[in-house]
Image (tube, rainbow, N blue to C red; front, side, top):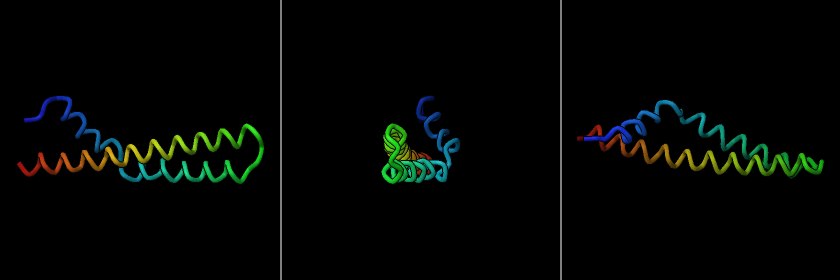
Length: 78
């Protein structure tokens, strides 16, 4: 039997579609590359910083999504 916290975590799978999580990573890569290519001082530094943040956020959310899908399959099996 699941507690309320686990139910809410599994419900979160529906709120964050896989394409959105992949979009975080893609936008992060584009921002980081543009930060290296465009040399305009603080703007390029901000693009690199923001791109790195989006890459990390997207990667973390993709891993969390995978863990929750595995948990959901175990719950549905029982």
